[in-house]
Image (cartoon, rainbow, N blue to C red; front, top):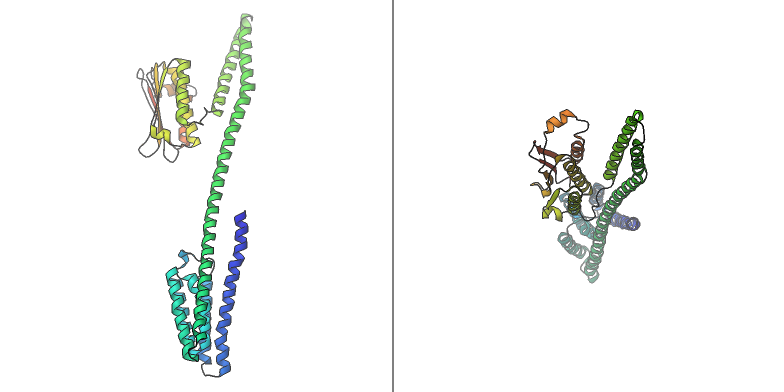
Length: 403
């Protein structure tokens, strides 16, 4: 906000300086025309033609943009230099016809310093100062005032011109800094929104766990107890109700796991190691973890880290439920193009993916389909290599853009 106020304060200053220069140039351009007319020297018509031509070139160049806004290296084009050269030529002819035209050099000083590159602008000021001194000396005779006046004007104009340029350069730098700060603020806001979304998901998971999941667990226990005292005619219905409650509880817990990922505050590698340790403790499967140091040192995006962790959880769950494996491994490596590959390997019974899908596509392959959907959402690729009796290798690859 302070940048907006500063810009609003400085813009009228620059506009006022340019307007003042335009007015000064117009007034000094009228002076030789009026003096030529009043003196009756016979140069009135040529002076008028040159003055009109000078004004037309000046207005045309200013309207085209050579002297509009704040000067930058990109605006100092060959067209701008040609424009300044044409004005200098017309001014030289005007000075040759009328000595009063020499005073027009003062606004030209500012023009040179504004439009021309730094060495060129200073050289142009020095050259035109010499022309003005020479023109005044030839017309009016050389005098101390005729020499010192243009020189003092050139020095003052140079200081003012370079001060103006320095001020505008600093303003450009501040504008760039403010734009960078605004971009950083937007990025921070996006991060905060993402963090807020994760916190909301965690809250929903806690609420579901404390209400729905606990209720289903209690219903399952009550139904199981009722089976022991219920006569045979109604026992089937109770058993079906208990199984339905058990399935609903399993689905609810899966939703809770989806809403609350393992904490990633210490990175994906740490979360995978904790996942392997937990699986080894609960299932007895010896799970090893191999993390490429290059991946561990990288800062993956939250979406990629969460997706890879979910894939590992789903794959390890399948290993525990279906494979009968004694050993499993979780490997995280980089790919040749800078992406990341997660590989889950087990030495279990294996399976034929095509036969399993054909037998019961709605249930048996749900875990695999869920993993595939996560990979596809990030534009990755999923590969599964398995055969009966030969274990399973599941690889999920994410590109560099996705991570």
